[in-house]
Amino acid sequence: MMDYVIGVDIGSQSVKAVLFSVEGKYIAETSEEYSIDYPHPLWAEQPVERWTNALVLAVRHLVQSTQTRPASIRALALATQVDGVVPIDSEGTALHPAIIWMDRRAGSQLQSVEKSLGSNRVFQLTGLNLDATHVAPKIRWLIENYPEMAKRARYYLLPGSYLAFFLTGEVAVDYSNASSTMLLDVRTRSWSDEMCAAFGVDAKHLAPV
Image (cartoon, rainbow, N blue to C red):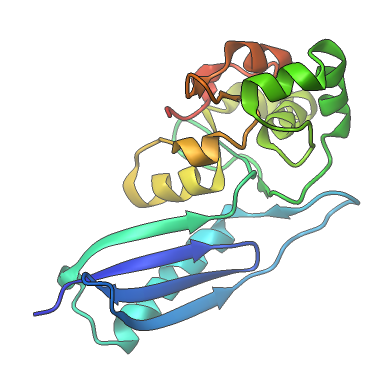
């Protein structure tokens, strides 16, 4: 009996699922498309159900179309879009559509940090240029514009972290994705107290790295 792994890419407009043997032989692939919402200029959102529904459908179609025994699938690996944010409550329910990577609504939140810290200090800590597409200003935008929601938020998760939580119930983030939030100290590889303070984000609401 052959064993398999499934690789899943959750992108901006679709989910692709690919089946490989554990030796790396390509077997088959499927995909499920979805849309992006643009409710206002510079905004870009996706309800998380679009991701999760497409993920389930793509994997189901892949397994069924190849007549693969579920018990023979040894692992599922995720690759996801970066620089999005999903606030969830203590029950794991999403409190707002995901603000995805191309969204640039948080310009004023970014400008306030530029004035207080300066672009050189931000780069020194995070390795990033000041840009509204990163996660930190988006979290600050949510806190300022939805204060009641912010009181209920247990975590602000990146897309990959949200989908891993959906699959496993565990909250975590990898170094690669965390490094693009503008909240990670790239030298200590931990959440930066200075950057969190600048954006008014309590690190207890961020996934463990």
